[in-house]
Image: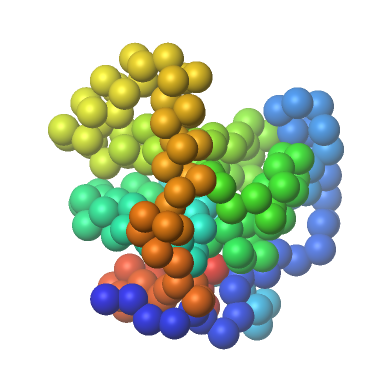
Length: 188
């Protein structure tokens, strides 16, 4: 089960160098560190750049259920996570011109800290995360991708608009089980 939020989320150091992002904008190159300045497990020296990062609303009941669903089925350890309320998510989203205070969508960051880093949102993010699970879930994601994006996103926005009413809202972000904490970039 999940518990209360960690006392201090992951923090990124100040910009140290710049490189052009995929849309020609300048973006920072950095390593992921926790609040004490130590590199996080799975940071750039490890596999962080090779794993999609799911950014989710940490106080949303539906989003927390989605994270639990993904954790349970991510048998090959392909996904990483961070709450949208974290400094980590805020800095990644800001770098892409996305309002970090907009909690109405799940995002998936691909190719983190690389020149081709990108951020998917809404139904594209959900389908991308499902594809990483492999097996039947990858097939379901492929089938879902055949539905036109405007229809998928219309359904997504309806659910997102009503998610707190339908699935509840927590007072704080939740902590994962100890065996999953290394997969969360906003944990120490």
